[in-house]
Length: 102
Image 1: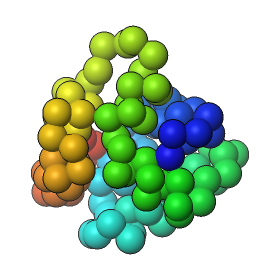
Image 2: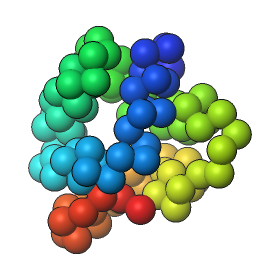
Image 3: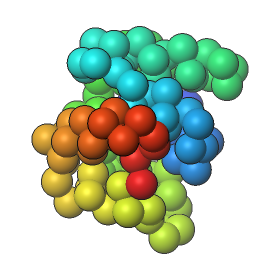
């Protein structure tokens, strides 16, 4: 998900607590991908499942490209330092707290 649209999507998503909470409700990776695709469509961005999977596999690059030197949020620091396993843990924590990753 390192193409321009994917970076644009994450840039618009990263500070949207409501959208992050919706994504955090995903029960598994397949559901997360579907939620991301729905969210992207709602933002008039065309992404496909292949792009989303690639982005989830390379979160560090995606976050780096999207933040453009801005200070990372706490959940982003954890994602970058821990990779996809940390991302799954973040989603689980967010689901349990019924809120967005922070």
